[in-house]
Image 1 (cartoon, helix red, strand yellow):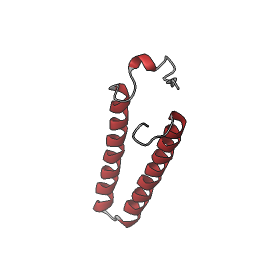
Image 2 (cartoon, helix red, strand yellow):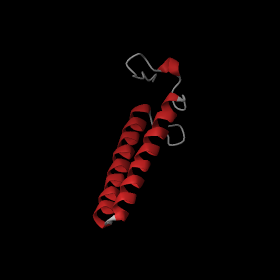
Image 3 (tube, one colour):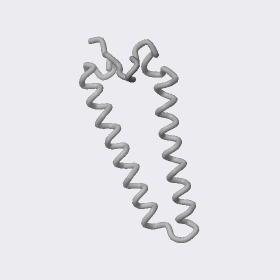
Image 4 (cartoon, rainbow, N blue to C red):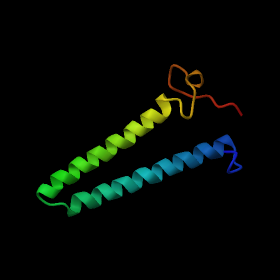
Length: 85
C-alpha cells in the first residue's frame, strides 16, 4: 500500500480485481487446453490442469496460514481480519 500510495480500501479492491482477472485467465487457458487436447493428450492435459489448481490453492493456503500477510492474532475465529485504518 505504501509503495503505491493507496489506502487499505483501495488495496483490497485492487487485490480483489487482480484475483478475479487471474482466475478468469486461468479458466480461459483451461478451456483452450481442453478444446485442443485429444486422446492421451487430453488425459495429460487434465492432470496438468488439476496440478496447477493444487499448486495455486496450496500457495494461497501457505500464504495465509504461514502468516505471510496476517499474523494469527489479526485473524478472528470466523477467519476475518479487521483492518486498522
